[in-house]
Length: 287
Image (cartoon, rainbow, N blue to C red):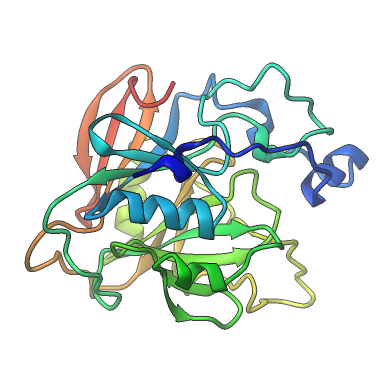
Protein backbone atom coordinates (compact mmCIF):
# COMPACT_ATOMS: atom_id res chain seq x y z
CA UNK A 1 0.00 0.00 0.00
CA UNK A 2 1.09 3.57 -0.66
CA UNK A 3 -0.78 5.08 2.27
CA UNK A 4 2.33 6.41 3.97
CA UNK A 5 4.07 7.37 0.77
CA UNK A 6 1.26 9.09 -1.07
CA UNK A 7 0.47 11.89 1.36
CA UNK A 8 1.93 15.19 0.28
CA UNK A 9 4.74 16.06 2.64
CA UNK A 10 4.43 19.58 4.09
CA UNK A 11 7.25 21.80 2.88
CA UNK A 12 7.37 24.83 5.19
CA UNK A 13 9.25 27.95 4.14
CA UNK A 14 12.90 27.56 5.11
CA UNK A 15 15.85 29.85 4.70
CA UNK A 16 18.24 27.31 3.22
CA UNK A 17 21.46 28.31 1.46
CA UNK A 18 19.75 28.78 -1.89
CA UNK A 19 17.16 31.11 -0.38
CA UNK A 20 19.80 33.15 1.42
CA UNK A 21 21.77 33.60 -1.80
CA UNK A 22 18.65 34.76 -3.61
CA UNK A 23 17.70 37.17 -0.86
CA UNK A 24 21.14 38.71 -0.52
CA UNK A 25 21.73 38.76 -4.28
CA UNK A 26 25.10 37.10 -3.81
CA UNK A 27 24.52 34.95 -6.88
CA UNK A 28 22.38 35.31 -10.01
CA UNK A 29 19.01 33.61 -9.94
CA UNK A 30 19.05 30.47 -12.08
CA UNK A 31 17.07 30.52 -15.29
CA UNK A 32 14.69 28.03 -13.68
CA UNK A 33 13.38 31.02 -11.69
CA UNK A 34 11.71 32.26 -14.89
CA UNK A 35 9.62 29.03 -14.86
CA UNK A 36 9.37 26.44 -17.61
CA UNK A 37 5.84 27.42 -18.67
CA UNK A 38 7.03 29.12 -21.88
CA UNK A 39 9.92 26.79 -22.75
CA UNK A 40 9.48 24.86 -26.03
CA UNK A 41 10.88 21.61 -24.61
CA UNK A 42 10.95 20.58 -20.94
CA UNK A 43 11.94 17.24 -19.35
CA UNK A 44 9.09 16.08 -17.12
CA UNK A 45 9.80 12.56 -15.92
CA UNK A 46 11.92 9.44 -16.18
CA UNK A 47 10.07 6.13 -16.28
CA UNK A 48 11.23 3.62 -13.66
CA UNK A 49 9.99 0.04 -14.16
CA UNK A 50 9.24 -1.48 -10.76
CA UNK A 51 8.51 -5.04 -9.71
CA UNK A 52 7.25 -3.62 -6.39
CA UNK A 53 6.00 -0.03 -6.67
CA UNK A 54 5.10 0.37 -2.96
CA UNK A 55 8.60 -0.73 -1.87
CA UNK A 56 10.27 1.61 -4.33
CA UNK A 57 7.94 4.46 -3.35
CA UNK A 58 8.70 3.90 0.35
CA UNK A 59 12.43 4.14 -0.38
CA UNK A 60 12.08 7.48 -2.14
CA UNK A 61 9.79 9.05 0.42
CA UNK A 62 11.24 7.64 3.64
CA UNK A 63 14.94 7.37 2.74
CA UNK A 64 15.35 10.35 0.40
CA UNK A 65 12.55 12.65 1.56
CA UNK A 66 10.73 12.88 -1.76
CA UNK A 67 7.00 13.44 -2.17
CA UNK A 68 5.30 10.40 -3.70
CA UNK A 69 1.75 10.45 -5.06
CA UNK A 70 -0.30 7.48 -6.24
CA UNK A 71 -1.51 7.36 -9.85
CA UNK A 72 -3.80 5.15 -11.92
CA UNK A 73 -3.01 1.52 -12.53
CA UNK A 74 -0.82 1.07 -9.47
CA UNK A 75 1.76 3.63 -10.62
CA UNK A 76 3.25 6.42 -8.51
CA UNK A 77 5.23 9.60 -9.04
CA UNK A 78 8.19 10.80 -6.93
CA UNK A 79 9.54 14.36 -6.91
CA UNK A 80 11.20 16.94 -4.69
CA UNK A 81 8.51 19.58 -5.20
CA UNK A 82 5.48 20.68 -7.25
CA UNK A 83 5.58 19.28 -10.78
CA UNK A 84 3.20 21.70 -12.55
CA UNK A 85 5.09 23.94 -14.98
CA UNK A 86 3.44 27.09 -13.66
CA UNK A 87 4.84 28.75 -10.56
CA UNK A 88 2.60 28.42 -7.46
CA UNK A 89 0.67 31.63 -6.82
CA UNK A 90 1.94 31.86 -3.25
CA UNK A 91 5.61 31.43 -4.24
CA UNK A 92 7.70 34.50 -3.34
CA UNK A 93 11.13 34.77 -4.97
CA UNK A 94 13.83 35.34 -2.38
CA UNK A 95 11.66 34.29 0.56
CA UNK A 96 10.83 30.68 -0.24
CA UNK A 97 13.04 27.76 -1.19
CA UNK A 98 13.10 26.42 -4.75
CA UNK A 99 11.86 23.17 -3.18
CA UNK A 100 8.35 24.70 -3.19
CA UNK A 101 8.61 26.25 -6.67
CA UNK A 102 6.91 24.66 -9.69
CA UNK A 103 8.37 22.73 -12.61
CA UNK A 104 10.00 19.90 -10.67
CA UNK A 105 11.10 16.79 -12.54
CA UNK A 106 9.74 13.43 -11.36
CA UNK A 107 10.46 9.72 -11.35
CA UNK A 108 7.49 7.87 -12.80
CA UNK A 109 7.21 4.54 -10.96
CA UNK A 110 5.45 2.08 -13.26
CA UNK A 111 4.49 -1.48 -12.27
CA UNK A 112 6.26 -3.99 -14.49
CA UNK A 113 6.81 -7.72 -14.67
CA UNK A 114 10.16 -9.40 -15.24
CA UNK A 115 12.30 -6.36 -14.42
CA UNK A 116 15.89 -7.34 -15.18
CA UNK A 117 18.30 -7.43 -12.23
CA UNK A 118 20.72 -4.52 -12.00
CA UNK A 119 24.00 -4.89 -13.87
CA UNK A 120 26.14 -1.88 -12.83
CA UNK A 121 28.92 -2.78 -15.26
CA UNK A 122 26.75 -2.91 -18.39
CA UNK A 123 23.44 -1.10 -17.77
CA UNK A 124 22.77 1.71 -20.26
CA UNK A 125 22.02 4.09 -17.39
CA UNK A 126 25.02 4.73 -15.19
CA UNK A 127 23.00 6.66 -12.59
CA UNK A 128 20.50 9.38 -11.84
CA UNK A 129 22.20 12.15 -9.85
CA UNK A 130 20.38 13.62 -6.85
CA UNK A 131 21.44 16.47 -4.53
CA UNK A 132 20.21 15.86 -0.99
CA UNK A 133 19.91 18.25 1.97
CA UNK A 134 22.33 18.15 4.88
CA UNK A 135 19.94 16.25 7.17
CA UNK A 136 20.07 13.19 4.91
CA UNK A 137 20.52 9.96 6.91
CA UNK A 138 22.32 7.14 5.12
CA UNK A 139 21.07 4.47 7.50
CA UNK A 140 17.52 4.90 6.20
CA UNK A 141 18.61 3.84 2.70
CA UNK A 142 19.39 0.32 3.87
CA UNK A 143 16.31 0.18 6.09
CA UNK A 144 14.10 0.82 3.06
CA UNK A 145 15.81 -1.58 0.68
CA UNK A 146 18.60 0.48 -0.87
CA UNK A 147 21.94 -1.05 -1.81
CA UNK A 148 25.00 1.02 -0.95
CA UNK A 149 27.63 0.27 -3.61
CA UNK A 150 30.18 2.99 -2.94
CA UNK A 151 30.15 5.47 -0.08
CA UNK A 152 33.15 7.78 -0.44
CA UNK A 153 32.15 11.40 -1.11
CA UNK A 154 29.42 10.84 -3.69
CA UNK A 155 27.39 7.74 -2.84
CA UNK A 156 26.54 5.10 -5.41
CA UNK A 157 23.24 3.49 -4.45
CA UNK A 158 20.87 1.00 -6.00
CA UNK A 159 17.22 1.78 -5.27
CA UNK A 160 14.83 -1.15 -4.72
CA UNK A 161 14.21 -2.68 -8.13
CA UNK A 162 17.53 -1.62 -9.62
CA UNK A 163 17.45 2.13 -10.42
CA UNK A 164 21.09 3.31 -10.04
CA UNK A 165 21.52 6.57 -8.12
CA UNK A 166 24.43 8.85 -7.31
CA UNK A 167 23.69 10.84 -4.16
CA UNK A 168 25.45 14.06 -3.22
CA UNK A 169 24.80 16.50 -0.41
CA UNK A 170 24.28 20.07 -1.62
CA UNK A 171 21.78 22.87 -2.19
CA UNK A 172 22.97 24.47 -5.44
CA UNK A 173 20.57 23.03 -8.06
CA UNK A 174 17.02 24.40 -8.22
CA UNK A 175 15.74 20.82 -8.51
CA UNK A 176 17.38 18.06 -6.48
CA UNK A 177 16.77 15.59 -9.32
CA UNK A 178 19.68 16.78 -11.46
CA UNK A 179 20.31 14.54 -14.48
CA UNK A 180 20.52 11.05 -15.92
CA UNK A 181 23.91 9.70 -17.00
CA UNK A 182 23.88 7.43 -20.06
CA UNK A 183 26.70 5.25 -21.31
CA UNK A 184 27.53 6.32 -24.86
CA UNK A 185 29.59 4.54 -27.51
CA UNK A 186 30.25 7.89 -29.22
CA UNK A 187 29.42 10.84 -26.95
CA UNK A 188 30.00 13.46 -29.66
CA UNK A 189 27.73 11.70 -32.13
CA UNK A 190 25.03 11.28 -29.50
CA UNK A 191 25.38 14.91 -28.39
CA UNK A 192 24.84 16.05 -31.98
CA UNK A 193 21.69 13.93 -32.10
CA UNK A 194 20.37 15.52 -28.90
CA UNK A 195 21.16 18.99 -30.24
CA UNK A 196 19.18 18.20 -33.39
CA UNK A 197 16.20 17.36 -31.17
CA UNK A 198 16.11 20.55 -29.11
CA UNK A 199 18.81 20.05 -26.45
CA UNK A 200 21.77 22.36 -25.93
CA UNK A 201 25.19 21.82 -24.43
CA UNK A 202 25.49 23.43 -21.00
CA UNK A 203 28.00 23.80 -18.16
CA UNK A 204 28.17 20.77 -15.89
CA UNK A 205 25.82 21.37 -12.91
CA UNK A 206 27.08 21.36 -9.34
CA UNK A 207 25.42 20.22 -6.13
CA UNK A 208 27.54 22.60 -4.04
CA UNK A 209 29.68 25.71 -4.67
CA UNK A 210 32.64 24.94 -6.93
CA UNK A 211 36.00 26.57 -6.25
CA UNK A 212 38.34 26.43 -9.26
CA UNK A 213 41.36 27.05 -7.03
CA UNK A 214 40.58 24.10 -4.79
CA UNK A 215 39.59 21.93 -7.75
CA UNK A 216 37.57 18.74 -7.70
CA UNK A 217 35.94 17.59 -4.47
CA UNK A 218 35.04 13.94 -3.76
CA UNK A 219 31.73 15.30 -2.45
CA UNK A 220 30.89 16.78 -5.89
CA UNK A 221 33.23 15.06 -8.37
CA UNK A 222 33.83 16.14 -11.94
CA UNK A 223 32.16 14.11 -14.68
CA UNK A 224 34.22 11.39 -16.38
CA UNK A 225 36.67 12.63 -19.00
CA UNK A 226 35.07 13.24 -22.37
CA UNK A 227 31.54 13.47 -20.98
CA UNK A 228 29.08 15.93 -22.53
CA UNK A 229 26.26 17.57 -20.57
CA UNK A 230 23.07 18.75 -22.29
CA UNK A 231 19.78 20.26 -21.20
CA UNK A 232 16.48 20.90 -22.99
CA UNK A 233 15.68 24.06 -20.99
CA UNK A 234 17.92 26.22 -18.78
CA UNK A 235 18.41 24.63 -15.34
CA UNK A 236 16.15 21.70 -16.21
CA UNK A 237 16.82 18.00 -15.61
CA UNK A 238 19.72 17.17 -17.91
CA UNK A 239 21.45 14.37 -19.80
CA UNK A 240 25.11 13.46 -19.25
CA UNK A 241 26.67 11.39 -22.03
CA UNK A 242 29.58 9.36 -20.67
CA UNK A 243 32.03 7.70 -23.10
CA UNK A 244 31.65 4.01 -22.26
CA UNK A 245 31.17 1.21 -24.78
CA UNK A 246 30.11 -1.44 -22.27
CA UNK A 247 26.35 -0.81 -22.38
CA UNK A 248 24.28 -3.90 -23.18
CA UNK A 249 20.52 -4.49 -23.09
CA UNK A 250 19.36 -6.96 -20.44
CA UNK A 251 19.42 -10.57 -21.61
CA UNK A 252 15.98 -11.19 -20.11
CA UNK A 253 13.18 -8.96 -18.88
CA UNK A 254 12.88 -5.18 -19.12
CA UNK A 255 15.43 -2.63 -17.95
CA UNK A 256 14.73 -0.80 -14.69
CA UNK A 257 14.99 2.57 -16.44
CA UNK A 258 12.53 3.39 -19.21
CA UNK A 259 11.84 6.45 -21.33
CA UNK A 260 12.79 10.05 -20.63
CA UNK A 261 9.55 12.00 -21.09
CA UNK A 262 9.48 15.62 -22.24
CA UNK A 263 6.78 18.25 -22.70
CA UNK A 264 6.48 20.05 -26.04
CA UNK A 265 3.56 21.96 -27.53
CA UNK A 266 4.43 21.47 -31.18
CA UNK A 267 5.16 17.77 -31.55
CA UNK A 268 4.58 14.26 -30.27
CA UNK A 269 7.09 11.52 -30.98
CA UNK A 270 8.75 8.44 -29.57
CA UNK A 271 12.41 8.28 -30.57
CA UNK A 272 15.66 6.54 -29.64
CA UNK A 273 19.02 8.21 -29.29
CA UNK A 274 22.06 6.62 -31.04
CA UNK A 275 22.74 4.53 -27.91
CA UNK A 276 19.22 3.12 -27.77
CA UNK A 277 17.78 5.23 -24.95
CA UNK A 278 14.12 6.06 -25.44
CA UNK A 279 12.69 9.61 -25.42
CA UNK A 280 8.97 10.35 -25.53
CA UNK A 281 7.82 13.86 -26.43
CA UNK A 282 4.22 15.01 -26.00
CA UNK A 283 2.05 17.94 -24.91
CA UNK A 284 0.35 15.60 -22.42
CA UNK A 285 3.23 15.16 -19.99
CA UNK A 286 2.52 17.07 -16.78
CA UNK A 287 1.55 20.51 -18.03
